Image 1 (cartoon, one colour):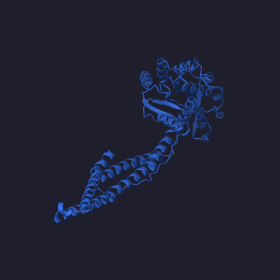
Image 2 (image 1 turned 30 degrees about the vertical axis):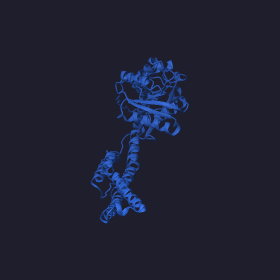
Image 3 (image 1 turned 90 degrees about the horizontal axis):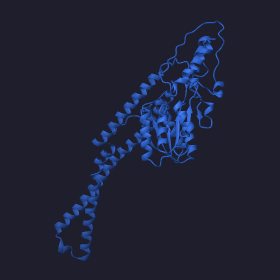
Image 4 (image 1 turned 45 degrees about the vertical axis):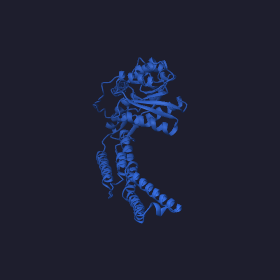
Length: 400
């Protein structure tokens, strides 16, 4: 829209300047050659020469006036507008994006401020329309920042966050992809929905890591599959057909890896296409053991069920809050060479020896006081089964 307006503003004036200069040059050359040949008096009367000279002077003056008009009323305004846009992007939008990322990662005390300001410039109507559009966008961003600050200004009564850092998961996935592809190639990213904040944080972490550490790996496609296995299968199948230059695929969630893996397998590209996914669903592990999935990341779901119960119980006993308010679970890279350390097809609540060592222990209940703790879990066995297993184990320990 902005480019179209700029074309309307300057597109018809600049050719006029060129045309006027060209006419002036032709007239000057015409008079010069006639005067040199001594034929000026023959071809031109005095009155015609005066008219031509006047036209030359008029064209020159008009050219200077139009140039100064463009310089001071339009070009300077556009320059100021560009500076304001860059300041809004660097100061406001980047700050808001960072604060939202911190909020999604469990930091409920993240504050935001707006440093850029609306602009007021007297100029042409077209430029004023652009400025008004800029100010409208600025006001909306300012309102978002104010609303964000209103949310986080309320004291947080949450005792503890236990879970993964989605951005770090994405970074780890980018690191794995970079190593597998030896630092160069083309990859695609698939996520359920662009509105799912956690998956978007994984995507951003993945892209950020590649950009910083593997600049020769290009993200050539980013697709949605709405967390439907069959839709994921069809989109990956089409992607592999249309993009023969594709080397790797990153799935930002753990529900549909089986769909992507099946598409790779049906395309006879198992092993050539590197597939990085999330979580330890049984179907995912099936394709991992076949070698179709190169690696999957576990976010220690057992601990996400176990730890909150024990920490809450300990708080109820001694009324002491945990030393930290964000307990980030470990991110474990699971491959065909080490999957037996993290997954057992006969035990959905399986936990590695290393992860078990990190689990917190309940403190002694010297008063023999009893508590009731409620747990709410989604009815989704793909990811939440081991979480429920962690809850169950905490219940068994506390009930003794």
